[in-house]
Amino acid sequence: MTSTDTPRRDVVRAEARAWMRETAAPAHASVITSMPDLSEMRDEDAGFAEVPQRLPRWRAWFVDTARQIIRWVPDDGVAMFFQSDIRVGRVLVDKGYLVMRAAEEEGASVLWHKIVCRHPPGSIAMGRPGYSHLIAIVRGPIPEMRKPGPEVLADAGFMPWSRAMGVDACRLACRFLVENTSTRVVVDPFCGKGTVLAVANETGLDAIGVELSAKRCSAARTLTLG
Image (cartoon, rainbow, N blue to C red; front, side, top):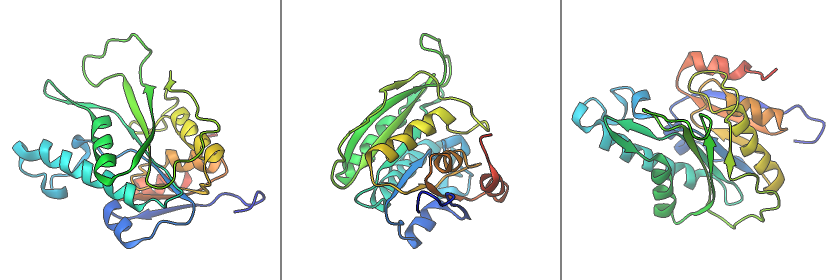
């Protein structure tokens, strides 16, 4: 893409893991994504129908999928995960840990780990914690950190839909790629309604989204940020 081109956006209706197995990563691609919670998984996905086994099955699915994403990204790319911890009953499930575990099992390096506030600092959250993890993983050479950005983002920003990654968090991630890497294409294998894709285009990057829902694919193709 040249500086005069309009950034492209392609949205594919497919199951993310199968699509990555069948599709090679584009040159100079990075991933920015948020993988589904246990509550978002359909009963038929990955054998989730057995209720007592849902949590361990989902944890195994999550780590395996994160590993697949890390392997799929080119050596000069970055895999970024935006994940909010969940509670199952009274038990906290730390998705930041699960991402770190996937990186360790792949022999990859954690480039940085940022905290994105979902509620103002000091808020008391009785259910889901009021913060999210934004973690960058690299499999190849460590890029020079010319402009690393803040370690804590006080507000995730506007969410175009209820499960969206906040726009300000997306902008932080895309800006990092533009300022510190050779990335020219952002891929979101779980793109939902396309927030990551819209921000990537706004930043001047081409974008590819993968989504199983036909309705969300349609929204992802047309989402704009005004």
